[in-house]
Image (tube, rainbow, N blue to C red; front, side):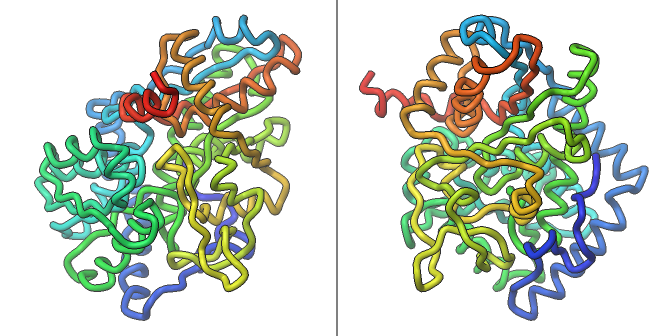
Length: 389
C-alpha cells in the first residue's frame, strides 16, 4: 500500500480537495484523520488487515491474460486485473475492510454508507455483519430499481437500505442523504465512504486501502512480461478503483494512466472546478453552480463529481481521461463475456470498451493492464432489457 500522492496536511491535491463541511463535522473528520494516521502503518493493524484480505477477500487475485480478446483485436497484449473475483464481487471490499477495522478501533457501533451500483453497499453490509455493527445504506430510488439483486443482498446481510427519493434518485442524492445523517449523528456514527471523494481525509483513506490493486498488478506484470505496462486503464466515476489501479504506477512516467468515464457523466472531460459534498474538484454544473443530473447505464459511475486526486492528475497531465458511449459499453460487456467467459460489471465494461478501441492500433509487443473492477451479475437483467434480449 502507499499513501495518496502529493496531498498536503490540509487534504489538498494541488488546488483540489480540502474540507468544506459544517464546523461540528470538522472536528469529527480531524479525529478520523488522527486515527487513520495512527493505525495505517501500525504493524498490528496492518497484519490484521492483510489477514482479512487473504482469508476473507481472497487476495491476491490474478492478473489474467485475455488471450482470445487479444487475438481477436490484434495489437497489444491485454491483461485483466481480476477485482471481480474478490468476495462480494468488486474492488469495494478492499477499502471497506480497512475502514471497518478503523471504525472498530474508534469505538463505532453504527455504520452508514452510500451506494450507487450496490457493490459498496454489499461490501459494507458484509463487513458490518462480520463485525456485528448496525448498518444503514443510502441508495437512490432509481438505483434500487436497477440493482434489485444487490438491494436484496444488503438486506439479507442485515443492513437497512434507505431509498432516497430526492433529485434523480441516483448516487449523488444518496451521498447527500448519507452526509445529512452524518451531520445529525456524528457522535455515534462512522461514515464508511466508498469512493475517493468527500472531504479530507476520505480521498487519502480510500487511496491507501485501494492501492493494493496496483501493488499486486505491478508485481504480477513484471513477473509475466518482465516490464511495466504501456498503459493502465480503469473506469472512473468517483474514482476509487482507478486510483487504486494507478497508485503504484504514478511515478513510472513511461506507463500511461487512462481513466474511462461515461459520455453521459463526463466529469473529467467536461467538468469545471467546484465544491461538492465537502471537497473541491471537477464537477458537472450548470451556469448557477448547481450539479447537473447524470444518466449513465452504470450506476456506480452516475456521479457529477470525481475524486480530487484524479483532478490533480489530469491538471498535471499525468493521467488522461476519455469517454465511451452507452453502445460501446454494451458491446464491450457482451464481447468480453463471449470471448473470455468473463461477465464484467457495466462500470468495468467502460474500461474494456476503451481498451478495445486502442489495442488494435498498438504494436504486438505492447502491454495493457485493465482493471476489471467488478463482476456483472448485478447488471445482467438491466443489460437484457437494454439489448432487447
